[in-house]
Each structure stands twice: as structure tokens, then as C-alpha cells.
Length: 361
Image 1 (cartoon, rainbow, N blue to C red):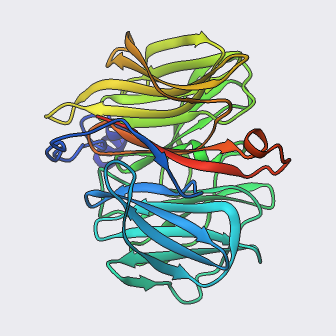
Image 2 (cartoon, rainbow, N blue to C red):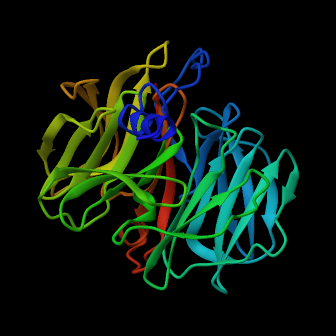
């Protein structure tokens, strides 16, 4: 084996020392209140340059709005696209200079926009088509590297690298059964969780080729899992009859064996909280727990080894549908969720009254 090849394999197996370098954690906010406020209907929320940013479909256009640490609207909206988009088919991802926005139009085009300040750019001849779900995957540990656009088209999952100016590169075909929403960045690689034959973690290069495969659980799962990674390994959550969590270290060894949460729980989000040095301090699972009366959003806090520390309620409603969970640099999050209007007005509309719930670091 040549030296470059040996170093590549070492980096893939030891991501904590080669690929997954966490940047210095910025100072925490002086105060934080775990509040729930009225929100705007979107699944596209991200932390960018000290504030929350959300892409909001508004009638025949798409606008970008900023929110403070409590989820309250700040300033005026910035129009980014004068074309109607498919409901909820929007993603936003931070870059080192602004954000990228991906939106599926009603005509079936997947538009990618680069926003820096008040400037909105779209690369010429950069048409991408999708007939299914998609996700923008940022590289928080490698901000100068292109983000990943993972999308479905004609039964295949494809990956395109997106430069910070919004220009997409050529598509690469991904392994079968890969869900766009179950992909995250791990240093200079991507990490995906598949669920057709149980939970399997795949380390993928920029061409979506499998570099490493780790079987986590063989139990059948219907819905895509959630996956998060840092310099100490990867964690995955999923739901069968209840929510589950498991984790591997940088070498792919199973360090957190599949562990069930409480009965009647459904996983909704996953956040890895760092300490002041950027090492993992805590694992946070956001889950919905339902009974005959209401849904309750719970925060399960586990230590770095997966031992449960605490469970606390975030908010409750007769019924809840989580649209997005976006983390901040300290292990907190903003959860966008909705309460179906049918339970409020007696109508049969699938639309939901939107809210934001802040999870403090």
C-alpha cells in the first residue's frame, strides 16, 4: 500500500484525528429561555452568523427571514425567488460567507441560490431536477469545502457538490435506499444512515462512494433515521415501536449499543453538544411522546457514552408534527413544528399552525 493510500484509510478509520476537526466553539449567549413562539411555516431553518435564518414560502415567492435566539422575527424579509415553490420543499444551509437555499419549484426544477448579505446569486445553466425529497448538507468542520445537495430523481439518490456561490457540480449516484434527510457531514466526508435492512452507517466520499459500512441494528425500520457526527464518532436515532439511539466511535466500533427510550416515543431530532474544547459533552435527543390526550416534546439528555442524564419537557399540544430541527454551535436547537389545523378548526386541511420551540444549550 502506498503512503497516500495508507493515510487515506487512516483518516477514514480515525475521523476524530484526521477529518472531523471541530472549530473553536464561540462564547455562549449570556441568556437563553426555552420558549415556544408562533412561527412561520417552513422546514428550512439554520444557524448562520449569530442568528437563525429560515427560508419561508410566501405566496408566489420565497423569502429569507432572520430570527433572534428566541425565534422572534428580526428585520425585514429578503426576497430570494419570485416563483412559487412546492410546499415545504425548501432547505437552507450556512456557508462561511452566508447561506445556500435550495427550493423545488412547482415546475419540478430544483433551484439553488447563494445569499451573502442582501445579494442573491444563482449560477447560470445550473438546472437540477428532482421528483422527490432533497437536503442541503453543510460542512461545519470544513466551511471552505462545498456543501452537499442530496436529492431523489427517477428512483435514484444523487449527490451534487455545491460551491458557496451556488454552482452545482456534476451529479454522482449514491447507494440505493439512501434518504436525503439521513445524511450529515463528517469532517471531509459524508455520513449516511440507511434503514431498509436495519440501521447501517455509510461513510461516503465526495462522489458518494462507500468508504466504510457499519451495521448498527438489524431490526426493520419504516422511516428514515436521524444521524449526527463529530470528532468523537457518530450517533443515530430511529423509531420502531419506540425511539432508539446508538453510536459508533471514529473507528466504526459500536460504543453506544442500541438503547430504547420510553414507550410511545418517536425520534424527532438529534444534537451533539460540545464542551469548551470542542469535544463531545452531551448527546441530546428530541422526541415526541404521545398518549391519548396530547403530544409532548421531550428533551432526552445523555452523556457522551450514551447514559441517560435527564429528561425534560419542552412543550405540549393535542398533536404535533415536527418539520425541522436546526442546531446551534453550543448544543442547543430551534425546532419548527406544527399543530394540524383539523384539531383546531374542525377542518380536514393537512396544513398546520406553525410554531418555533427554542432548546437552550
